[in-house]
Length: 113
Image (cartoon, rainbow, N blue to C red; front, side, top):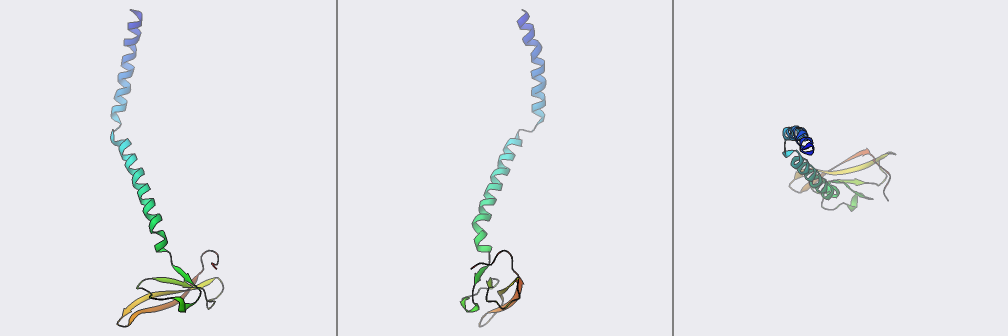
């Protein structure tokens, strides 16, 4: 009989614990899983589109063929001051093609050979 009393005395504690767990929304675990999977999917998408977003680099401006509108190409021909590199971009569309604009921009990172 004494064992039965000990068991029944423990039940209110379990009931209180279940009440506390009921206050926590059950969707919390699902939303965390959803958040994690969304972040992973977004990371893979950024990784796969990353190389397309980077600018190309060539040694001479004559190596640029078929420059598209908005495309940027870095040209390392030594015409810009130290620490800078020439950037050629397709700025404007005209009847004969795309107008190239040239400007010197700061070189980010080490020189690529």
